[in-house]
Length: 87
View 1: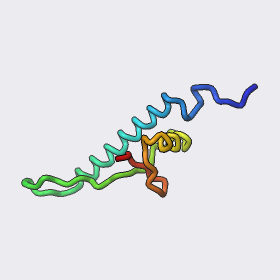
View 2: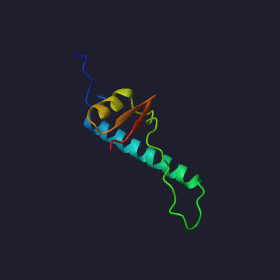
View 3: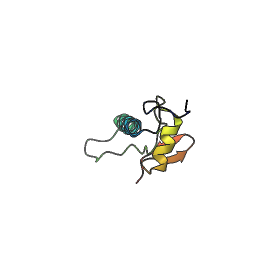
């Protein structure tokens, strides 16, 4: 028997990476919208951005997934367990 994981169990499989990145983008967007909705701005103002640039990634994916996405340049590690989108 080999010690290699099957494609379904491989945390760095392309399908799993795509799914994790999609979940990350959705979570950061929801977090930003939530923050923006709590900010009070006058009716004539242009509004303000949330200022949120990073979040703790969803826990349903293992750490290897986030490390691989950073390695590929699709996420940026910000420190203290926080990740953000590059650029």
